[in-house]
Length: 632
Image 1 (cartoon, helix red, strand yellow):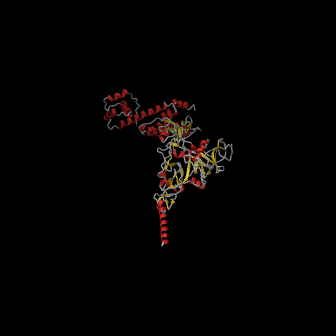
Image 2 (cartoon, one colour; image 1 turned 120 degrees about the vertical axis):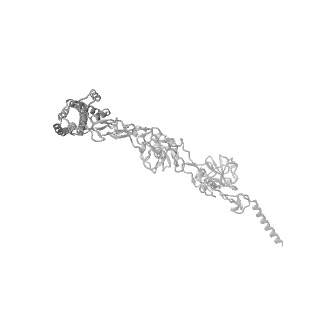
Image 3 (tube, helix red, strand yellow; image 1 turned 90 degrees about the vertical axis):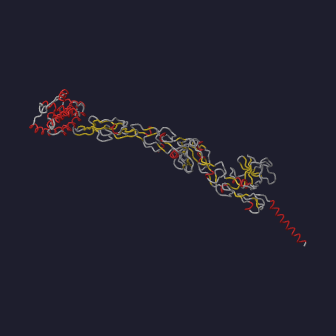
């Protein structure tokens, strides 16, 4: 009985002790085991993981096995250099290989700590370790225990990184993604679960985009967007375009150490501090800034005379603005216009100048980085055979002209001619032939903005038979035709002599009361002459009424008027021949005679053959013509 009582007492004592142990268990544990990394709990006396450590690090955070401390001492000191190195790697410190500090009982911290960029370990196994506190200059690396809250158990993804998984225990697991090029991590660390919440666009301004769009090119009116969704440089500006090249040569070398260092940093190269290669005219190494994959060093040929190409071993680092200019300054002034001011964002501002008259616009598409930035580059003088028809435009010189220098046209003169457009040389009329002329609009009439004046002129357009005798041939034909009519008509009737009526005669006739059946032959001639003159001048109102009253149904008098009208016209045509002082005037006069003879009515008016012969041998006209032709 006694033994049973003792056993019950022992059993009760054991259970009582276990109950005490559970009651004594603090938060952040389960069954006296610390919550694992990435989890936490704030309820005491729990016996399972799910009850004691229900919290998990949320997305954008990760559980910290180790932590950095800047005051007092670690709650739990790391006890080995291996743990110290692992902790430094997980915390992404600059140095992840610890070394013994070799000191005891100093004011430095014991265990693992980071000091002036180096990782140190102080062994306290014999209770001879350091006794100092953690500080901003002596950062303690501690084992993270007491994970009783999210704040103590988890840490946000580093700035510039983000992720969506929960309960992670490392940066790699919780924050696998990084802000893309052109973006940076936001300072606010409350939600680093996506690019939009963790990253912000780099600011593009006059500092980051120091270069202005070249003259002759201009940016878009609105800022563009990069592939990453960020705005590009302010319109009218662009930034450097650093690239690594393994073939050929740089179009634009980087020639200073500071620029080489900055370019290497932008490319995230292993070395960002350039050193002079001290090479002269070497064919195996490139000129400018380059990265040697053999030595993993950044080099620059400050002598700028190496001859080698870029390659896999010597990778050139180039600043090639052409590609970025095409993107950020995509527009080029229209052909025939140019600009002289850089940094513009519209055609109206960038392309204020037009190629002048006598020149044409050259098509420039930026090849070779040549842009329409001046008249000398954007405009060329009209070639021979063409003239300035509009500012910036050229047109072929017409028939009768040739093109000369400076985008102008000149007439072919004397015994030369041009029979095709765009001629650059007048042809000589040879083999006893004569110049063929035509009255045509001048070259200036082809376009209202032409550099040439517009008027009708006689042009030398071809070479053939003498145009004077050609027209006389038409006149001779008229003589034959009308001569035959004259012989027939002269046998049947007699024509009264031509009367030159002056104004007094006409006035006398208009005021005189006449009996149409009692007019003398001269009075009939006077009457018809007056009416013809009035009709020739289109002033018929003063004579039509009176003449119709006295000559109703009198066809003879109507024929008389027509005949005298033709005589008056013939008189003027003869005068145009005798008064001609140039070949042009003489040709036109004979042409008009030809047209007159061809349109005259048979039996109403005849030209005597002698008159034609007299005209053809007119001494004055022939003398003037020979004088103009240089005595030929």
